[in-house]
Image (cartoon, rainbow, N blue to C red; front, side, top):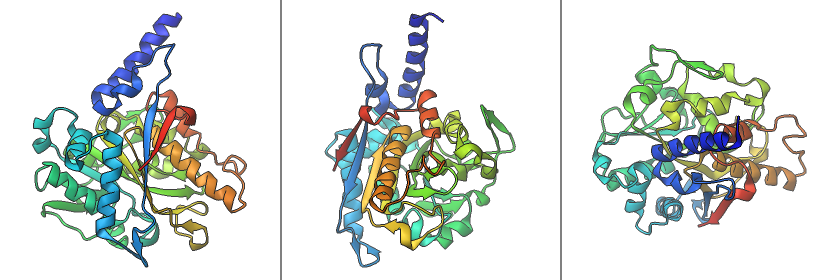
Length: 333
């Protein structure tokens, strides 16, 4: 392939991503002379906890700081509108936003319900219609185990895929062959991903991209070879890639070893949220944060333990985002 043909092809991939997510436009307009960059915001509040309880007002503030810093829009509700619909403001009342949380490990190492509900209420305040915001995961039992209350008809719905089932049509994409949650295939027009900042004993880390293992019927099939290329290929499925608007990693409490189940001796309070519209960059930064904690506590690197999350680099090769830390602008908010 001629060099100019290769560059034209990669530009096409990047522009396709930009059209799906308006916030990505500035990140993908790259030539052979200009390297693409992306933004990851780390919003921190050391006083977000009172004992073991989260302080609601401080969660709201830290969420607002993350989103306004990411979009460079000072008004939080305008920032949320930008995240969901870009400049097409007329679409906000028609959006159906599914907030994917992670509840597998129970209360101490899950997406905090308080955080998910703050995001949900912000979406309603920004103009998403009542009943068109859904907080979800794989099952209702897992949601309840993590402290969520099942709501089927309130302004903010909360339930699992077991409430609606999986699509009857098999989705086949690269290494992936799965039945997807009907929440993704039929209900949602837009996805917000709120994973947890934590280690994973098989695939290295379980952050944003791997959180969508909770959207398919057979996640057990996608752990060989430290999840590579399965995690990346799952995130490249069009119904996820084209609907994803924001990754907001819950790093309020995090874990640097022994995951995914909660292990008190390897958990720490980071008191941070990590936000980006680039699913690869946010995973790369989260991985770096986990490695820093491992080094601090005298543990070997994930590569030395032969569970380096190489799928993050595979995702970059697929054009899903940036994995090179030198090209990721990290902003503290």
